[in-house]
Length: 150
Image 1 (tube, rainbow, N blue to C red):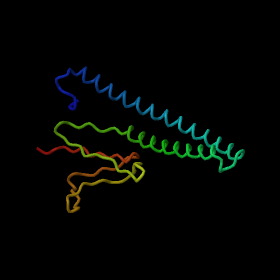
Image 2 (cartoon, helix red, strand yellow):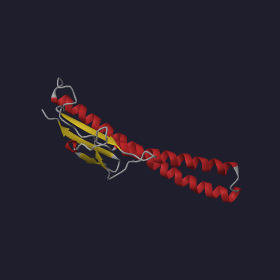
Image 3 (cartoon, one colour):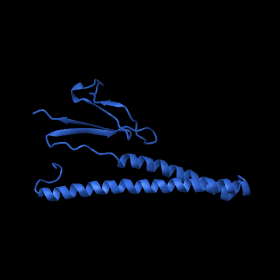
Image 4 (cartoon, rainbow, N blue to C red):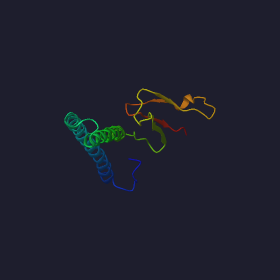
């Protein structure tokens, strides 16, 4: 591990790395559970909205409040999907002598664009082929680790 101080014993570095990995997995699990709850809540709210609309009419204040809650729930679900995309990204490790060019390509809703090829270009827009290319994953994430020439 070149990103953790080499003064730490290997065992300590391994435990720190494992702790970060476990924390990342726990974060993904927690986000997934929250998203699952949002889906269930959305379904229950939809059912209740239909029931109340049938009973009280579309213009009733309670029906309108539930419709508003449904919209908020849908927005939260979309945001959770984005957060899950980001949480699942694994940045590749590189040696100290290497560099990493990476990022995320997203749409107007912050959702990742998959299957795009990313090149680097100079200020005139000329692609720098020697730096290679990268393809975006489902999350929109791309990475291009490069060895630095001596």
